[in-house]
Image (cartoon, rainbow, N blue to C red; front, side):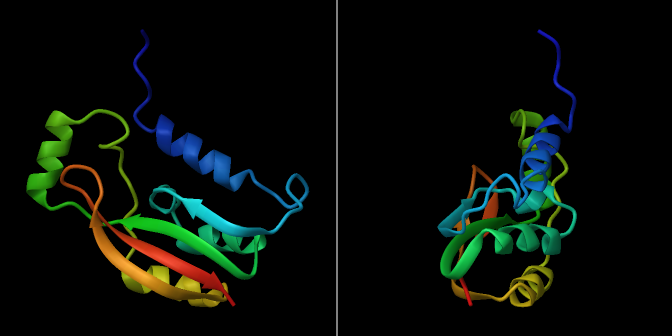
Length: 130
């Protein structure tokens, strides 16, 4: 079997989300969930811009932002894990995320940290569209 390129998962995730447009999907959704997508997009503002287009007032959005790994976690992941765990994710600061949330007229209704996969942690957000 041919070995996958190192960033194939990041490319597919980014392509899927960034290719969505209002011409192909005309609906607005009550609930939107995205699992780990924001960490593969360079600018969280772009992520919230897209999510905003498909949400309506009162829509509920769930997403998580993976947190950076410490050195021990990085070494474990590189040694023990396979795709997509060691792809170079983009780790966005709380300030950066929350600035984009506000800009695109969302309100944080819940936020909590949780154990993601093995040694990974993330902040889970629940948002409401204003």
